[in-house]
Amino acid sequence: MTVIESIITMQKEAEALRSAGRRIGFVPTMGYLHEGHLDLIRLARKHADVVVMSIFVNPTQFAAGEDLERYPRNFERDRTLAAEAGCDIIFAPSAGEMYPADDSSWISVEELGSALEGAFRPTHFRGVTTVVGKLFNIVRPHYAVFGQKDAQQAAIIRRMTRDLHFGIDILVAPIRREIDGLAMSSRNTYLSDQERKEALALSRSLRTAETLFAQGERRSHALYRAVEEELTRSETVQVDYIGIVDPDSFLPIEGDVGPRTLIAVAARVGSTRLIDNTILGDEATPS
Ligand code: AMP
Image 1 (cartoon, rainbow, N blue to C red):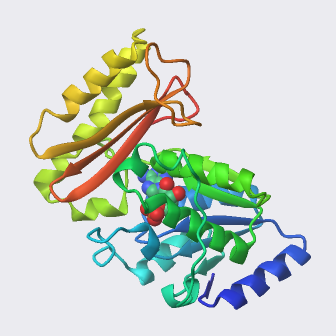
Image 2: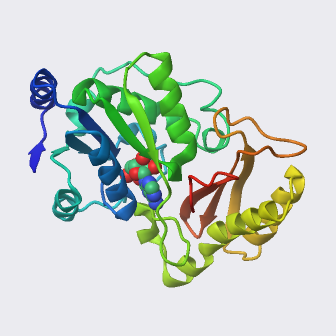
């Protein structure tokens, strides 16, 4: 496995691979890898000849006061895990090169980017779409793989890729969970033992909705209340939102939910903000 830090070197490598007829699969991450990230590498491997993973803690997707400085990093560990999972190239640029001093261009996906996460983190998705657009222009992939864990992000990237004609197939991998149901996240490392237990309220609330749905419950407000009840059992858990939405448009579903409905939750457990989601009625997305 090779590590590339320079943008021009990565671009030249991508050009050479394309000229040789190799299909490039791309997995953008912020590092501190866990099994969820490694699943994305494995999915990319199934489609592509060469797998590139970027590791870049992107400053523009963090607002002032968020966890940019304390975001966990361990490059050596990431390098070993990525290689074992089948990654061929790690692209790890510097923030200075990714964002030249007078950088003033942004990509933003409107509407989709202002619901749920966008309402709580108004500048977040603009940072994500801008960095992913830059990375697409550097890595020149045929496929790019994202996690269902960040469902709204995946929908926004899909929309951006279509709207801006990037010509890249977007693949989405299911949420990888710990044995007790907690969705894997680099941020789980912030949780104390007690908070780690309280954090299970997120996945438990989604399981409750899945069970009700399987029993025939279709009323959106009833599903909402069941999720809310589970999430607010503990005072340590502060709910940011519970969204019952269409998984593509992210428009809220009122009245009865249809055959494919996304329930997305965000909550703070102590000072750690966590998100999780499930698609009701979608057997292809086990959770
Ligand atoms: P991050 O490093 O947190 O920015 O995540 C990089 C990619 O990994 C994103 O596409 C995430 O959606 C995906 N990802 C993060 N956690 C998980 C998980 N538990 N299961 C599946 N994909 C994940």
